[in-house]
Amino acid sequence: MKLVVASRDDLASWNIASKLIANNRFEETSDIFHGNTTYRLLTATDEVRLLTVEGELVDLQELSRPNEVELIVFVSRHESRNENPILSVHVPGNMGAAEFGGLPGKVSIAPANAMYSALNRMAEERIRLGLKEFEIYYEGTHHGPSLDVPSLFVEIGSTTKEWSNPQAGEAVAAATMAAIECTAHLESAVGVGGSHCNRRLTSLSLESKVAFGHIIPSYAFKWLTPELIQNCVRRTLEKDPTIVLDWKGIDGKHREAVKGVLEKVPYRVKRVAEYRDEK
Image (cartoon, rainbow, N blue to C red):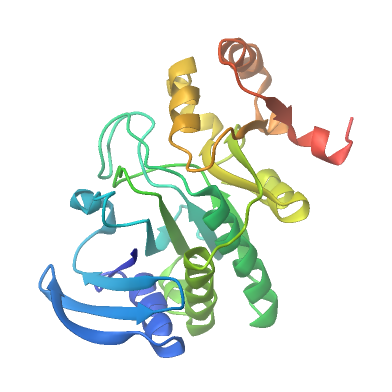
C-alpha cells in the first residue's frame, strides 16, 4: 500500500489533495484517520490511500509502519523568506537537531527514483499548464517526520498566492501520482553542497537522468561527518548511490573539510562537472 498525506490546515496541501481527488479515481471510504475522511484509489498494481489530517504534516511521526506501507507522499506548502514561486521535492528527516518535527539525527528513507519521477513531472506540468513564473527544485533533506518508510514531500511555494493557485495544485497532484506510479531505475545519488533549493543538482537530474534522494546543503555542513554520509547512503532506498558534489556551490573555506570527510567513506564520488564535461 502507498499513502498520500494531506493537511486540511495547509492551503497548498488541500489544494493538491483536491486536485488528486478530482483528477483521479479516489473514492471516499468509511475509514477515519485523525478524525478525518480517508480516500482510496485502486490501480492495476497498487492500493493508494489518501489520508487527511489537521495540523502540521511534520509532526506525523507515528506513520512509520514499514510492514504495511511501501511509500508515503506528503503534499504540502513550501515557505521561504524570498517568497519565490516554486514547485519542489525533498526527503523528510533531520541531519542534526529536530527543530520542526521528527527525531534528531534521523533522516527518512529516500526513494530517489520516485523523487525523480515527481520532479520530472513537475517540469513537464510547468510547461503544459503555463506556470512560467514557477521554478522547479530539489530541496535539501530537512524537517520531520523521520520515518522508516520511503518518504518524500512534494510542495508548492512560497506564499498564499501560489499555495492557492489551481494550476500549481494540478501540477503537484500529477507529480504525486508520478511518484506513486514510478517504474524508473536510474542512477541514484546523494547530493552534497549548494543551497537549500539546489539549482545545479536539479538541472543535472533533469538533463542527465540522475535520481537524487538525500541532499546535504552547505548550511548543514556543521553536521557533516563520515557517519552522516554513511547514514544518507544507507537510508537511500536504491543501493549504491553515487555521492555527487555541487563543487561550485561549496564555499572555498569548506572544500578541504568536505574532501577530508569523503576520503573516510568507501563510496563513489563525482562532481556535477564530470557529468557535463565541464572544466
